[in-house]
Length: 454
Image (cartoon, rainbow, N blue to C red; front, side):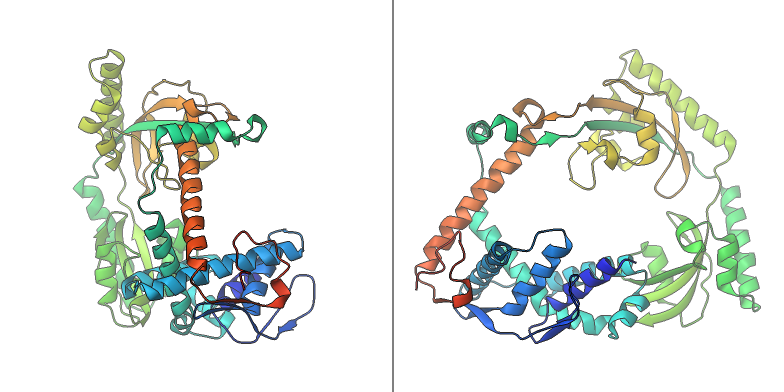
């Protein structure tokens, strides 16, 4: 864990507080920030500490020290407070469930980064619930700001003519460079696991459960025998997880356990498990588990490969299209999209090469655009062996953005520009009737909006 990462978590926590702060800056010893109000928007305020926390974060990211950066941060905070003030006037609300969902997502992120729930609590000397309590109001405000922005821009759209005009305004040497991207389809054939293999997995886990019940250490057994590579080396410990994080069958069994109790064998998509309850805190639990995955026998695997060889032959003879074959024969959820693999980071079908999982990358690396592979061995998300056909539909070369190849990206940028203009018009109109006071320390800033009307 790096010093900068710990400082970033500190900054993340501090941004939710409005008192006097003591924290470390990278370029100095500990500094005490004496807080003061530096901006008033309607009945909302901006404090000196709000600016300084974000300023330090910018410095950590490599931004050069400057008064201009502080001014930009201040203006962004003013804009947020203007949106919050209007949300209050318009009686905009966000539900408690939205707030809690956002809080849970943030906590999970930091637990993943720092290593465990216990480490996060130890670092701050506070319980997770206490940390969430400090975050809650600021998370609510963030969601209110997003809701107001969405209201202002909800009817904004761009026509093809506007997209072309946006593109034509960009100087040629300023067009962004687009990395090589691919569109990939696949047809997956996953061999069924026969009952004999399932029975062997269940028998193995029952033996391990008996050994644990007779006094052997569950963690040691998990380390030696569990087939979950992530948790086995941690003695089967999954760390604290909350409802919704695990397989439903796993959660049902785990939440029914008392402390130190060991579950009977349960089945999930990943395989078969036994679970030991370590601790429960409300809707979150810390458990250990041992996973045994039924093996796919060689005969079934060979049959899957032969099946896809026949499908490959049909496609090559034009007896069926790849997408139709995927809908008809694939065992993967992508069958509903004709086998199209969607990029989880962007939500669209384009992948930069570095975004591909390694087993897919090494297959398509030597393929030509439009080529279909013969059956290749793969591992599914739950760790089982399968075969698949891969269709490399498109592959672009690195290039400057253009309308033919990158229309979606340019359209997105044009839409964001139009939304920004709509928000700017809204801000200028609201400033005419909103009470504003700015500290003298910031009156020399080169603002985008007329915050200095008084």
